[in-house]
Image: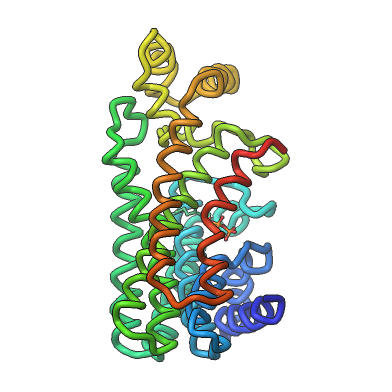
Length: 316
Ligand code: GRG
């Protein structure tokens, strides 16, 4: 895996080089700040279920997904007016919103160029995925500060903004590796289910995590008016718990209000209830693995979602 990570790094760094040192600096900013490179790792793992090593084209396909992820983060930080990400200043904070939008667009163009070099199917898939990300984000925006937000809205938003890109990364791994259609479809299902677990875990950690672990104080989503599954489940509770939380939310929060809202969610079953939903997606991802060829890569795909959820629920 270390070797695969090096291959990923080489391709990403190559993709963000431009003839203009100013644009290169801005486009490289978040790449240099780190990140887990999960989407290319997923593409590579998916391509390896047949037992062969991932080709350079598989790595490039995974990097195309990572560049879409990065581009979406550039834009997301503008939308949220965030000033830190991955422990460094955001592009919008350092250079300004216009630069962040344009550099984000540049990353999307690089992703599209790589995808096109892998064939029309991959190019079409990546283009559709960018659209799904935007749809998921718009669904989230539409319900900002909405204490009556439905679970349907939440699930539809995280499907679009997070799960589809993991599904696409796994699918591209399968397409570029040349697998049969049913295997490609199963890999896509695995990726989408894994992506749902990933986002629910992210949302649980925003409630339970420490500032040290998160790199920002917990409760950030509630402050921003994004009511995620643990919060929606708490809002739906009776015995006045839901009413108490609803009275706090529905508007921007100061630090004391945020801490109060966090205390209400933490003291009740919202997190455990969200984890139960995450377990349903873990089971879906595991079931998909029953239809994949047996081998070490399939075992890794089977184990990853439960391990991810467990890591979020374990005390630190
Ligand atoms: C321009 C493609 C594009 C989209 C515009 C702004 C937007 C619409 C979408 C943003 C979607 C978004 C921010 C989803 C959150 C995804 C998420 C869970 C990010 C964290 O991913 P990690 O943990 O991050 O993999 P690292 O830093 O490890 O890469």
